[in-house]
Image 1: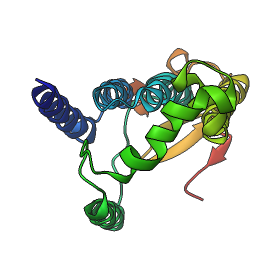
Image 2: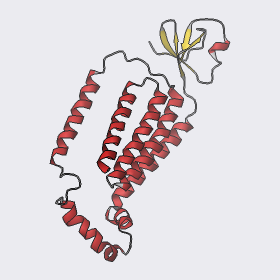
Image 3: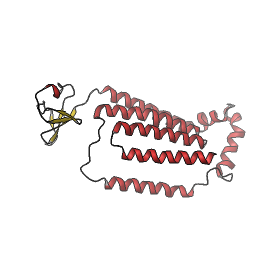
Image 4: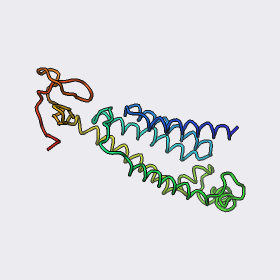
Length: 221
């Protein structure tokens, strides 16, 4: 039964990852990334890594999603087509993935009773944690004492992410990108809506708008 759940979660992770890659709407991509984090957290729970699952759910599906939604509120939801083929990023991703897969070859089989962790670390925690730490709950003693620095690091990540969200939201509206007369330009966020001015053929985030707008900066030079 556990193997069936593992396979089902891995299949869902693969489908979600493929959907994120093919998604052109950034808002939908962010939502799919949140779903991916929740599926990852579920997989960690099945693997008895509840603390890692908690961190993944809090940071991956929670704080990270809020941070990216706040970013989309400033830059828009539509993806701009790149002017060059992403060959180098694809190469870096494939190379990094190959290195990570190669690094797993020396990892002992999951759940094997002969794993070193089952003969040294785990018995010590189970037998001595209450005497050394004074906490009857073994999981609490591990997270709060034996792995205290790891827990502190996870808490710091959540706190820094929260501060980043607050700083991002405190910046207020950012300048808008407008496509006018065959080129991209930038206008102030608090400028009058271009649609309220004369007629023209400019695009603001994919919406038709006139080209008589006040320019703050010509990005094409």
